[in-house]
Image (cartoon, rainbow, N blue to C red; front, side, top):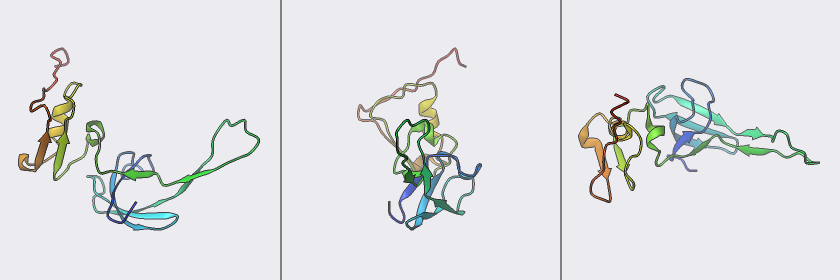
Length: 137
């Protein structure tokens, strides 16, 4: 992790602003704390502090105890279409190395950008299909 790196929360910390999938930008990295700024819709621009937490295994039959420390974030240079749901993006690039396989998935991917000039789609096959199940409509 580095300052300026895009991050994504991987657990709910303080809903509704710090939920699983919330995108952040790291501002300051310390040994036990990360200062970050929220870049997603809910709480945009707000500074948050994410501390390192300790995780202990449950139901362990081992004769010793161990603890795992981690920040509940991961680098977020890219995200899946499903993770992008509910977010508004200023610029988006969609890499379709395989066609969409679920009802409305292409629509969801393309509808999170306000302007079509800020949407970039890469489909190696040259074309893709929009999957729509008429029985769902």
